[in-house]
Image (cartoon, rainbow, N blue to C red; front, side):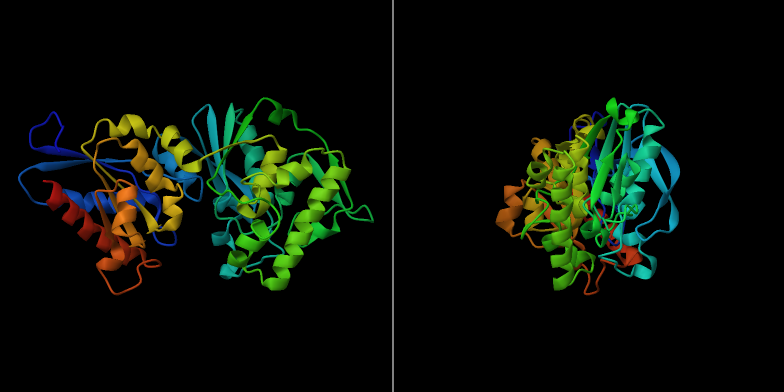
Amino acid sequence: MQKSLVPGTVQVLIAPDKFKGSLTASEVANALATGLRSATGTGTIRCDLLPLADGGDGSVDAAVTSGFTRHTCTVTGPTGQQRHADIAFDGTTAVVEVANTCGLTLLQDHKLEPLTASSRGFGEAILFALTLKPARIVLALGGSASTDGGMGMLTVLGYSFHDTDDHQLHGSGRTLGQIHTIHHTPLPELDNTELIVASDVHNPLLGNEGAAAVFGPQKGAGTDDVATLDRGLQHLVDTLAEAGFTDAAALAGHEGAGSAGGIGYACLLLKARQVSGADFFLDLLDFNARKDNCDVVITGEGSLDEQTLAGKLPAALARRAGKRPVIAVAGRSLLSTEQSGELSLARVYALADYTTKDSSTNPELSVALLHRIGKDIGASIL
């Protein structure tokens, strides 16, 4: 296994995603590294930490950890409160995320607001990023609180929506159905900036597989709310078409238009290019070069399941690892031995196998278990 130039040394690249609801990717990587370094055996373990993201929450932090600079701006939270949000910038590329601008975790007292939450703060963060004059902006769409079709975001980026009395509307799921006219004033700043949507969501905007039906319930939408939201999103598409956006209907059926409560659709209207979130961040954070200097790769996320097989971060990473052993660590694993083999995982460790308690919302317990797992992995590779 060893390829290190230092005899008796095993080089380990620790490249996990976050454990959602419990630990950031950096916290996961640090906890595993602590455990690995405490392992005893015939050699020494050296750890290279590469916290990753797949386009969801944690994307800005992952970029900063890899060398981007953190910039802070003030945005409107999902239900109207002013808050600070971070973006990442390296002089060329800016990373902006939904989760830290208008995400579910920002709702006051964790009260879900399926009809009133807005994506406006995400648009404000994009506008701030444009002041830095980036060549491209990466739009990380995971973790949204709203189902407004990106209406809130668009109100900041040159679009205005008016009701039948010509009153300007603020974007939300509830106001989608009130749109009567739409005006568009192009932003010159966007003309020379490439927009990249980093997401692995493939749902269209409308219908049974759309934003409201599939993701609305996660944001607190009941059966009637889902129907209201889907009608509102359809009305948004129809009104855009009436306003002269000839590709409005076609874009609604595009894969990924339903991501982040329809923010994906608004990004397509802005001519954003869609890419695999997992693969894009592996490239952005230089995974290929980093893995060339290691003997073993450790990756992971909160849950290894069917969605992992569909191309989430651990699957994308395993494809790139070549002949290097890839060990996965997760809060829980629902994968069979055969499925783990399909992903070319040498072994899977799950926190759930080390405790009878629920670690998914318990950061202290998660860290302690990751220490134990890191130590066990270390003992197995020394």
